[in-house]
Length: 231
Image (cartoon, rainbow, N blue to C red; front, side, top):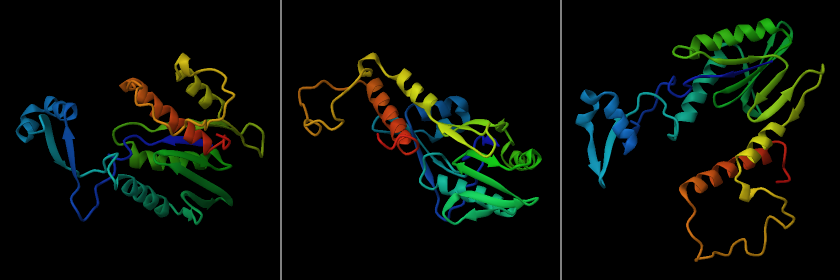
């Protein structure tokens, strides 16, 4: 088994679109661009609503833009196809190939890959293939062995023919990041009678608490789709 993280996954994907993709950079991001190369970027600064703004034309897939994930997926899928792998008809992020009479499987979520084959040399061969394509600026992050943390899940292949899965560490990290006021035992239902009632006299949540709320909720939603469907 091996897990691989591809560095600069989107920025190593060319922008292949019939329409031009423009990106609007405002405030601190625009100023950082000017600071990095004043001669090149200062002349492109305009002011909108009192904020420094720069419009750029994208020639790479930019994380967060609508088409970036699709372009990056297409590049990876094209590589897999050229290497003789076949897409699983039920899941486009699972690819398989018969190598030396045994099945090679590669699954991925964006830039995080998990590779499996009974022969370690085959895994090494395909990691080298990925290295040639994606390690042009930074090295791949590779983990080999029988125990892996993958997408917030702990996968243990120590017992032959078995895979033990858990998310205890993921839950523990969520717990440790919570403030003291949010920790404790709650015996009431998650949907109390005042769930949809708005208290207009409540003070606004701070920017830090707002960010923490969204971050924690997203992690718990991820957890609920993996090992805790009761959430």
